[in-house]
Length: 314
Ligand code: FAQ
Image (tube, rainbow, N blue to C red; front, side, top):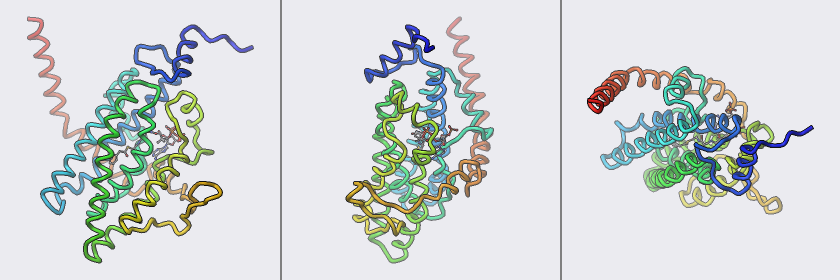
């Protein structure tokens, strides 16, 4: 026998059906809350860990202008992490809990940030491909049913779109340079292309969370749909750059109205998720070290806040 939904459940269902926003004060099913905490905290961790591959090049950027732009971009990623941690906190998890999960290595973050950045062209490839994939995935999240998440995504997407253009411009400059610079740009795209396709998550038939997240209007498109949309965006841009996308089987299929591609190496994806990617251990080591090094800042801030509250009482 199916149970009648409670008044609260019926109100929640009506909000979702009407495409309205669920706000922190509203009743929501525990599983909806848990799903949002999972996705938003993973997203926040991705932004924070995502500062490392590019942070690697701040001291070695080829000009003062490039250094200033890269520093601003990396600071934007920190800001995105903070908006997202704040959005997750409205669901009842604390910032300390999320940080502890990241430091302990029990939290997921995007697979893409476990790859190395050996050349300057990697800054171009990250901007063009990684931020490009992030935009494709995140523009629909601006309409996510949970208000604080959707609103955070609006500003994040504006900034990501600037990031994508700066990456494209780095690659364009290299592609108009010497043969060695063109080769460096092509090599970076060869290394980042497939991992950027993996950012959208496993294929739809292996995506355990998609059905429920779509029913709750957190997700608006499937992993494979967004991956296709991303490829469609890249093809004309790669032609403008005169850069090759490293897939000999990539072609438009008129009948199916989609791009045919080679098979993605999902074994590599699941290896990275299991902590065995090229840079997983290094990313966590650097994050832990930064956390420990920052302990005195947190202590000083807490002490300052304590003194201010005493002053307010007096
Ligand atoms: N990496 O059932 P699904 C950025 C996990 S931000 C690692 O399909 P879902 C900005 C997934 O969590 C990039 N894990 O899951 C930037 C789940 O595990 P769980 C981050 C992945 O949630 C640029 C399991 O696999 N963006 O780039 C990945 O429905 C440049 C099964 O998967 C976001 O987080 C992966 N790629 O769909 C920063 C966007 N894919 O939790 C610096 C928000 C899947 O059950 C520099 N998130 N998994 O143990 C989303 O849209 C979704 O969470 C998906 C996954 C689409 C990523």
